[in-house]
Length: 358
Figure 1 (cartoon, rainbow, N blue to C red):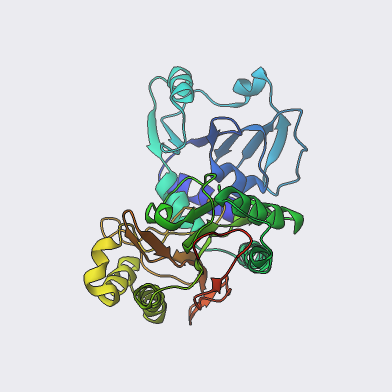
Figure 2 (cartoon, helix red, strand yellow):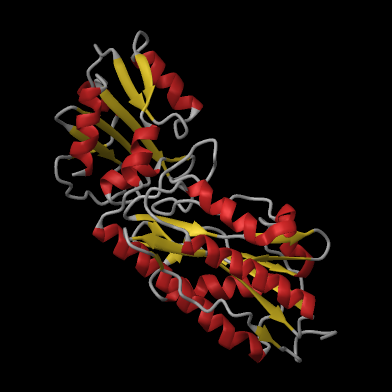
């Protein structure tokens, strides 16, 4: 179905063929994964109005894909591709400079058309299999988090890196992968939204965790912020404010609204503290951990049935701490179902054998 819809689009737009390149090393165009159902080591994918050819190296297992001819990638692939074409589709954001030059030499007189926006709109609506697969990745993430909450009080984990590795190991032992490098940010490190996990010792304060499992090529994404030691009244109030802002965004989610309106609602709840909220509310989740729909006002997306996305409000106080609460959700047309249902009550843990100054 997805291939035929794309081919119909090519016909309508009078695009003679679309060309995709995938390399595990330098250009992971996830549209190849979307059509092929696998992550190859290297691949070329050529789609025409009534045919499609996937070229794989001899290192990869050859899948069976409806409507697609799978061939071994050799230099002879060029012989299969027509040269007399007027318009060639590419994904501008994924094509490397090197391949851009190669295609320009192959088709020096043709017009190159960015098919990325159309594919983004095609991929944003998940089918039942995709929803179930993402839900499985989410459950693996939740299981890993709950396992971590049981492990931390034992005093075996002493640094941010220990925590991150524990989560990643748990996800892999459940049959999943790691969707993106895990963030474990202790104390003032949590004030940096994309902190790079380090050998920072665990200590009294907020510990922000941002992680996600992958499963069968699809991703999950969740964040929880816990407290090591006993939080102050102010810290508890700030945590609960972030939590309420996320709940408010979920409550107003409905078809016909635009995603940026959810962001507006979150900032309304945060009030004066919204100046410490320095990123968008969320993003789509699928084969890529960040994909359409966008939450930006400059590129408005309407909430639609079977969209999967995150809600992740946060506040960040430089030199002090940060708090982020994130879930992956599925809009089924009636409600926004949370696929990462780990508790969002503030968890407080005491680790006397590891943490000093609690």
